[in-house]
Image: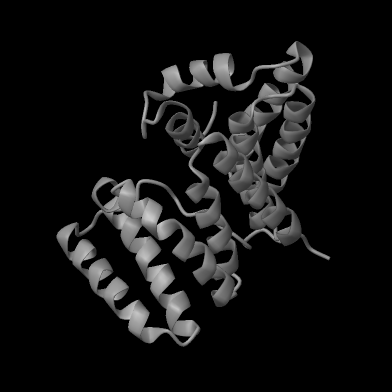
Length: 219
């Protein structure tokens, strides 16, 4: 089945909703997202499912390969931009976990472009791209991406819907600002993050952070 994050991505930019019953979501993804040439459609669906299963069990190298093939078949099937955005988004995340940074950046930027062109949640790819930089201590690049999504997070009221996840974002953004000599800009973000964590003690973010750079290939 598709991951909750993938489904959230799809339903937000297709139907304008944040959550949906997972079983209904899988059925709709199968019927709506993966449309196009029947053979390539079926193949893309199969690889996407395999990619999700692999990432759920922690095998991101296998997940990456399956999402790579899902992207290829999705393009051959001439799937719509919104569906292609999901495939590129997942391929980019998986690539970042195994330290294929060039591919991760390309895929996430492509997901951003496709979402932006089709009215999808482009901020999700921008945020993940920022995190790939943050986890490599490339703070200037992280600041650029984090600043790009701040207005969208505020518009979507992420602070209310996922307060701890928003606090995580604020902490990362603040640290990136501090590391680039912008402590004054970071200070109010730290204050708001602390307030949120005190208001929701013991709570966790709604989604798990992608473990970028944790499964690098041995050379």
